[in-house]
Length: 240
Figure 1 (cartoon, rainbow, N blue to C red):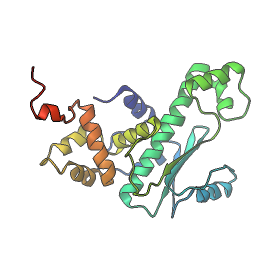
Figure 2 (figure 1 turned 120 degrees about the horizontal axis):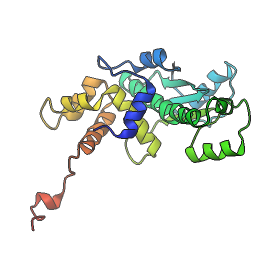
Figure 3 (figure 1 turned 180 degrees about the vertical axis):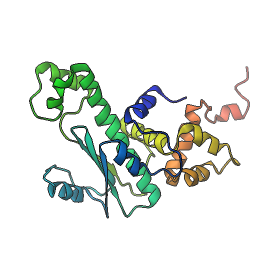
């Protein structure tokens, strides 16, 4: 069953369920969201800063090598991704960063507009200062004001979705996976062949990096309520 927050985010994005796989999410977001994917070779934060500066928007970003970067303001966004990465890596990076756009920019903006009305839009777009009440509410509701920037780090192995990550990263990963490989269809693919090859089937069918497919298998099992392996249970020592 899809978690409530995930269902809300999928609906808020307005992106339809995919009809073919692997999915070209970059094309969909260009048409249906105010998001522009931008491919750059050997992506670094400095290249993103220069690209933005050449177009009249100055931002400060500490130097980092990365898979992708999301820059959002005024309800629109840019998603930068490394053109030198494999197609599978690029596909997931774009989806992950669009996930941040929806979760961390679009939805909070929608909540603020619903609560305050259109009068808050000039505050969100930095065209006027917020009132004390607006400042307090924005802080309590984690409503973004001005420009938001998110960087997808490149780890030593290039793996994504592994290890201990912040809640926002987990949610962006999960939303990205729902767009690229909807859980209902992903479960059908998992069950369509022998055990032990689930990650390979998932990755090949939906065009996911292997590390991401491995993580998704664990997520799907957890969401289906499949119990984790227990050595005590295996040895039959839980009876009585």
